[in-house]
Image 1: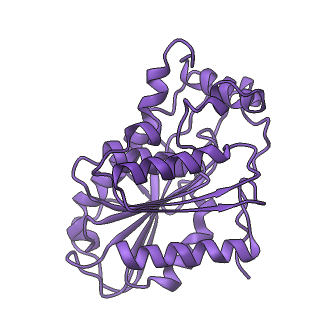
Image 2: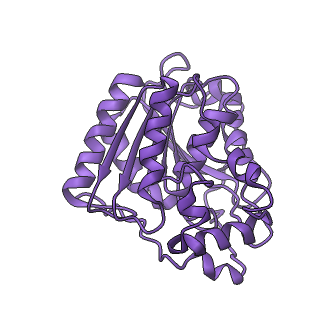
Length: 296
């Protein structure tokens, strides 16, 4: 049975930011830095540190018979509204990818979480950059390439797009997938619509930046505004009944990528919310797999 694909966070999540969010990751199975190539059997390394903070860890799944000339890397970025979530939330996708792509490496990351006055931007993007640098420094150790494909869900999809479009200076990201990821913080649905008022309040509490006073700040961290003609191929999945991410976020991102001439695909599940399962989840996996086969 397919793992339930459900990121239906309560629509009042951001209003609850009056309470300080505290999160920690297990440090069990921490490993020391490796200096020589590992055996070429399939290996799982859990909670590899890429920084000093307790949340700066990733799990890496290395296939058998890998090489640093051919073994590409999936990077998974969890959701959680930038203030919560954990890499374990993406384990269902780890399992799917290991079955469908046994010759690829998989890296499932954690990153530092935002809270009141502790802005996720650029902190979480810097964390992703640190993960990529760590992986590049360990290409010989892990026997992997520096070709990366990003798959993100919700806030993780937003971070994946911003990193791929605006932080990937070496163009190592070969494709990015957004599953219900916010794309434009300056969308009128976010800035003006009372339905999304809690989102607006939460973002301003976290970042300390007002939408009205500094719209440029929000443009700087919006995939819609930072995408360029060199952005990698992108596949987008959204729900028509999503109470956290307006439909316009996917529709307009698709149009922007078309305008820029960026290869992209867009699927809108009209009757789904901020996550789905069953037949539509299977459809998402199938479309993602076809996209990967073509572009990665």
